[in-house]
Length: 70
Image 1: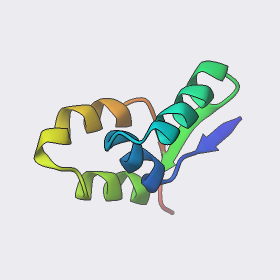
Image 2: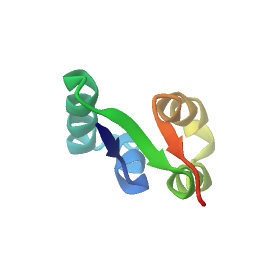
Image 3: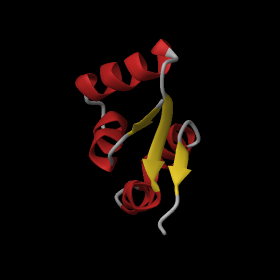
Image 4: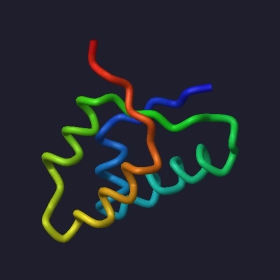
C-alpha cells in the first residue's frame, strides 16, 4: 500500500522534530507501506532546504518514490 507523505512532515523531520522522525520510522520499519510523495511536495522540500541541509535532504528524498503531476 502507498503512504503519501506531505512536505511539512519531511521538513519537520529534517529540522529535528521527534514526532516526524517517529512517524516516518514506523512507516518504514513496518514494511506495510511504500513511501511516496508528490512531485510538488518534493519541490517544496527542496525549495525550503537550507544549504547545510542539502546532503540530509537528498538522502531523505531518495527513500521516497515520487508521484508525477498530470
